[in-house]
Amino acid sequence: MPHVYDHGGAVPQRTALRNALLTRLSVLKRPTMYLHAVSALPTPLAAMDEAADAYLSRAVGGRYPAVAVALGRGDAAPAGMPQSHARKTIEVAVYVMSAHGRDYVEGRLSGDVSAATVTNDPGIETMLEHVEELLLGRDLGVPGVSELRPVHEQEVWSGDDFTVWELLFTARVDRTINHNRLVTTLLAEIDARHEVEGADPDNPEAVSLTTLEAP
Image 1 (spheres, rainbow, N blue to C red):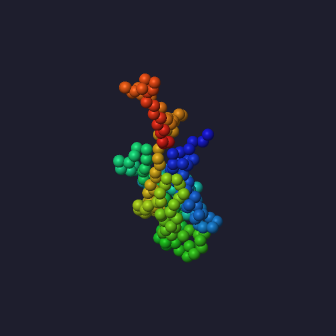
Image 2: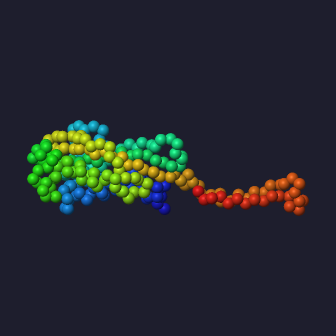
Image 3: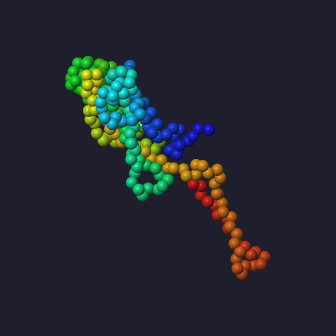
């Protein structure tokens, strides 16, 4: 029997969130739009150097323009919430990449005459806005995951091979922990019997039956 998670889904919330992001951004892929690859990264980029350059290139199979998605740290909500209610805010990093060969600015950033065709590389700045339009404040359809909120956008790499910019969002996730998950038998009723001093000898006990509410 497959495991059912406390948020009601069949996979962990992080997995469902990542998959939903990849699905949403895939509308920008060829043949109808311009992306050659939409890929997942295991972690956001801590720093960009030649090693990270090669790492990103492998992640998208050397195909540009491309988008990559990574989920980062999760920060727990302040104390004071019920212990059975788990809430945190997860970092969502989206990387847009262009290898436009004409120029670092007109081509890589702002696009040029080739961007008039929707299947051509439109440049980083167009890609950034397209990602925001697809993700900001949108319901991703993942149980317990709220809409994405913006944090920042920044350039992380400009090299001869390609240019990379990062869009950082946060997503709040909630779930109610089922503390009875491993319990095989639940107490449903309490049948109590008490001897009462001075009671009728024929009925020396007081009987009470309490029905407990289901958790």
